[in-house]
Image (tube, rainbow, N blue to C red; front, side):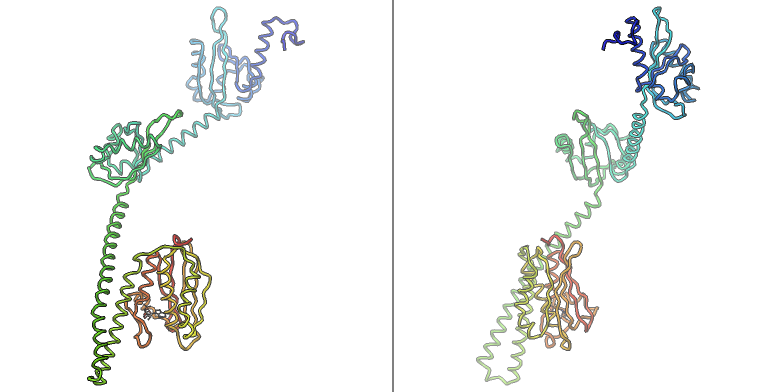
Length: 506
Ligand code: ADP
């Protein structure tokens, strides 16, 4: 719209119209306080923005000195006068700081005071422009406080060495953890290269440079290895180097976090040494059991064959008593053969195990098929609850159920109606199986002993057996990474319980 054609502007000169419009604009700007001050700093004019920002109406404020907006300490320091004098001399004065509203609350203002001159270049007034930056300032203060707190926290961390490196690996700062782990004080180390921490061999091989390169290319680099302290001693370090970028993805440097894992490393090394030793011992033992039992069978075979020859070819030359002795020799030899075979079987457990998905329902059903006659003869009721499908070694697991169920049948009490229950229960990280009977039970003091090879609580005349079944079971469960134990009460019954951990579940 052409301003001059507006009815309100009629009769005004072009300059008057421009002045009027400018005046109106200034008056209505409400993001900025625009104030006209006389030479002493008294307020001559006041726009909407000023009213909104400072809380006074034009009526209340006109004629007052602009120092009314300044906190007492600024007034005491003559800041308002200084700003006016600066604007008078150099044409402009800028300042940022806290100002006071009418209600006494504070706001953070960014101000520019500009001197207005007449044609003779004399200062005749000032325009003061104020922008309210309170929100921004508060945000800045908060950010800064957070930054300071974060910095302090990093500095105080004791268990991690946290440092900043320049793009070429020069140490820029150093926290308490770094001092504790590496032994240098901040003053001793800032400005030096992080290569200092590497053993000579790593330095010669360019390991530090390799890490920097990796972090530059991938954003981070991780490493574990021996590092050297100030006193020359070494520690096992786990290091993460992270690249820090500016807005335009230029590398500013790296943050480096180092943990001292010497203790963990020592434990791991000891553990791995023990494991290796144990593996070796186990191999030796397996070999020994295998060879011993294998070789023991030879003389047994010889004894058996000669006893047979004596019996068939020379029986009429011997008295009944001698023949009875020969029978004893035969029985003892056969028992010895059984013992040797079971020892051989024990040595073979887990030699070539094959982990498979095993449906325990099917597995137990097939065991019961084999034990059909024994179950029937003993008149035992066998109850199998729903069992899971797990990842296991099927041949070994079958042998385990076979042993536990046939023991439950064998060690029944003749005086009661015998039962066997097979159950499985899901626990947090494992399946827990149970084979329970109401048989003769076991005294508490034998709970551990019965799992040892050839340990028996009964003579063969009472209960048939060689005393290796439970040792087999324990070895099988250990092979699965689980545990096997017994809970029993003498003359009441027994519960054989074993766990198979989660990784074996499908
Ligand atoms: P064996 O049955 O050949 O003697 P095991 O190693 O299977 O060998 O068992 C060791 C001993 O543990 C047995 O001699 C027996 O005394 C005891 N035992 C095992 N299972 C049971 C059970 N279900 N009830 C009572 N005693 C048991």
